[in-house]
Length: 431
Image (cartoon, rainbow, N blue to C red):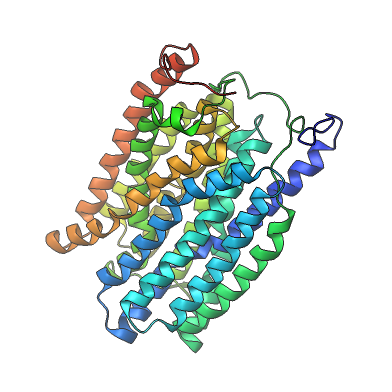
């Protein structure tokens, strides 16, 4: 028997659940690298006098390197193989995220801050791409839900650390928060990495539900880059990701400008603290929720529902979010209708191009998040030029409406024709 094949009588349920659980915990450990960033911006601004736009460039660098290097990282995982690839890549990622935040803790200049952002971004991307790639490979029958649960660790994980990070910043300074949370999170990932592996042949169950358009072929990365389906997905990802990142990176600043950030809601908790907790939980919940829905009704129809609700949510926050509870509710709705991109797009990508090169192909698509990150400072430019956040939210609402149209009237017909073999004529297929 080949060393890459195991009997189909292997305990699939327990093996798959262990892999899913380890991936989720690793994602939780990198969540506040992105979603906790907003807590550090004002303290750094006050401590060093750096302009907010300059500090936010570090966030853009983090997101760019978190995404743009993942095709290389994904290729390495696929090349090394199912047994060693995932564990080695995630272990390296754990080391890098610890180093990155420790550098942030001691950064006395913007170039050093940018260096820390770059290193932590490379590490986070290695962990993210590998864990999501593992989920789509282990669960072809429940791909949307599995990827959604994995991505939920990244989206909701920061909810566990919002209060502790704010407490450490308030009592010991932002540098202490960077140092200790970076060290602990990196250490946990390094330990868990050695449990990870990809499935061997014979370890995965059957196909997806009938309503999910799913190919029986596996396409090489080169073939994927020649596919119009990939580039439509890419454009859609950029539009939705940019709108969401504008909110996630700026939420503390928006709360301050709306004069609600420090308003106490209950038990001494401020509007911003409550909003961050709700936002992270909603962001995490969105991923398995809409992933599960997409397993039932199809990816594109789910995108249409989610992003239509997203457009309404952006409009509501911009128009009526100046009251404390309204801010909490409408910001939460934005996160609930944005976070699902990290389950819907990976699922759609693997449905369209197959599992064999899934980690690499997903990583190619994930670079769209890096491209969208450089649109984040545009929100500050619009806000400064108009004097309010209203136009920013109008723009983000329009971006979501455009994606709804692309999902229903461009992506779905293209994917349907691809399955019939009409779109991939002349493109090399690999099985």
